[in-house]
Length: 451
Image (cartoon, helix red, strand yellow):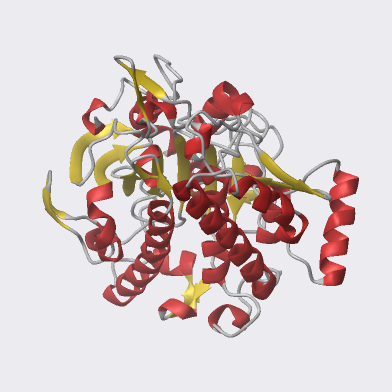
C-alpha cells in the first residue's frame, strides 16, 4: 500500500440493503508530520473517544463488592475477582452517591428514582403521567458529537420495557425502564433484541430496501457479508498488512455475531421461563447479554457511534438466576434483611454480572487501535443506582470506571471519595469527550482524581 493512500473514515462496504461500516484502519488516519518527518502510527489524539454505561439492578452485596485497601495497592473483592485480568485497565470508585435519588420528601419509589437519576443527576417528578427528569449525560454527549457518527447514540437492554402506567409507588414506568433521556420528558427507549440492533447497525439504503434485503438473506440463509465480499476483496488489495489483518478479524467478528444471534433465538415474554436456566435452549440470558456487548464493540470499532447505554435489567425486576445458582427472583433476594443465606445468593448474582462485564472488557481489549486497544480509547462505567437493596440506599454506589480515554485516565486503583456526587465523575468524563460544562445535574465540581 502506498503511504499516501488514504480512505475516508466513513467508508462502507455496500451491497443490496446492506452497509458494512469499516473499523478504524491506519489508511483512515492522516499521517502526522513531526519536524518534516511522517509518523506512521495513529496518535491517541487522532482516534475517537467513546463512552459507555452498563447498569445492573436491585443493589449489590457491598461487603462482597468492596475491595480491601486503596490506591494501587488494593485487593480485588470476591465479586470483582472475575475482573482480575483487567485490574490494570479499571478503577473501582467508592463513595459516590446520588442525593437526588433519595426520597427528598417524595416517599417511596427508590427503584424508579435509582434508574431515572442514574445518568441525569436529577430528581424525578412523582407522577404516573406527568414525566419530568433531566437530560442524561450520554445524550449531552450525543447532542454534541453525534453528528460525527452514523448514530448519535445506542441504547440497549435485556429487559422488556413498560412505558405506560405506574410501576413504583406512583412513579411512571418510564422512569424504571430507561436510563437514557433525550429531554426532560422524553426517554430513549432501548432496543432489547440483538437481531434488531444488528439490522440497525448494518442496514443500508432505505428502510424498504433493507427489509427486502433482510427477507432475501433469511430466505436463502445468507449473511450480510455475502452482499459485500467482492467490495471487501477489492479494498483489501490496496491495504497494508496490518489493515488487511484488522479487516479480516473484523469481518470474522461480524459473521460470528450474526451466527450467534440466529442461534440464540428471541427473548421469551416471561423472563421467569425455565428456558433461562437451560444452556442448550434457543435463548439464554448470558448469550443475550454477551451479544449486546458484542454489538457495542462493533459499533465502537466502526465509529458508528461513540455513546452507548446498556440497562441490563430494570430496578425492581425479579428475574431468577438459576444459571448462577439462584432460582429465586433477584428483587426478592435483594431485600436480604441481613440474612446470610440471602446475602450469599445476592453475591452469586453480583459475581455473575461482573463475569459478563469482564467479557465486555476482554472484547474491547481484543480490538487493536493505533498503538493500543479499543478499550484504551473508551470510558466505560459499570454500576448501579442502588448500593444496599435492603435499605434502598443511593450512597456509596458500586462503580467501576474502565478504559483510559486516550491516555487521560490513570487506571489500576481503588479510589475512595467521601459522599461525592456521581455527577462530578460525569462532568470529568464530559471533558474527555470534548463537551465542557461547568455543572451537570447536581454536580459540585469535577472528579479530577481520575486523571
